[in-house]
Amino acid sequence: ESADELQLVEETEEIDLSEKIEAVKKAMNDLPENYRIILSLYYLEGYDYEEISEILNLSYSNSRVMLNRAKNKLITLLN
Image 1 (tube, rainbow, N blue to C red):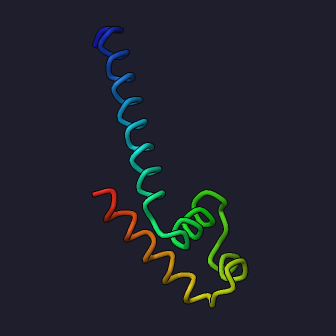
Image 2: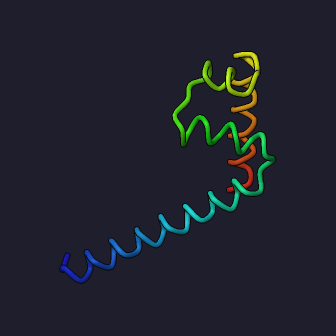
């Protein structure tokens, strides 16, 4: 491949990533607040289930269930 073709591929990949990021941001904004919070705590802040359950005053199992529901809702909004 020529240098021009490689540059075009890289630019296309950057556009695709940018579009995906915008889609995720929009979908996150469309989620209920409690889902946005738990997804942010887990994926953006790096808290584990135990820490999330303490922060949100939930049982360990409820934090897992809520995170799973939030992920499923986000996936649904993205599809």
